[in-house]
Length: 112
Length: 114
Image (tube, rainbow over all chains, first blue to last red):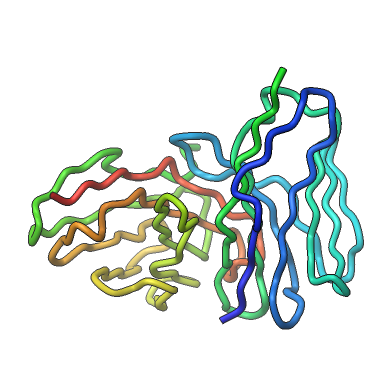
């Protein structure tokens, strides 16, 4: 089965800096990559989707990139705030009726 | 508009007991799925459904049954609970008949099997 990996379990950064989270995939490129935010005790919440033929997507302070050469997606939060502290999950969707496959997540802590 | 609801929020079972985790949605979404989330393991797909009457297995289906008789409901049955099924269970839905679209997650059910 196709895999997706988030190599960093945890990331600590200072408030105001840009947080960059990495998601790597194996074998062929997924049709889509999705990013979710999960707060403790809650279900994940959708943030952004990027398609294989898109290099970059933005939403407010969030930016996602899709690099098919490196087989990688980067998720950036600019001007990070303590309220951005959460676990961030990436997920791949391949085609047809295949289900979404999630990475294990990266726990981001933004320190004031 | 309640979105995705899950009941119960918490449950404690003894080994060998059976139970059903309920998931209901009022968004008329075709795609529904069940995940379990364990520390260090991330979200793992148990079963999914692309529409009423259609279900398929995910990554970790053993010990779980599902059925989809209506668009709104997608219950997950544990036939004989085992301690390895202690986990947090999430139901998710998506608008189209595939997982392409945004997934909407329920609040989760925390299950402990003694």
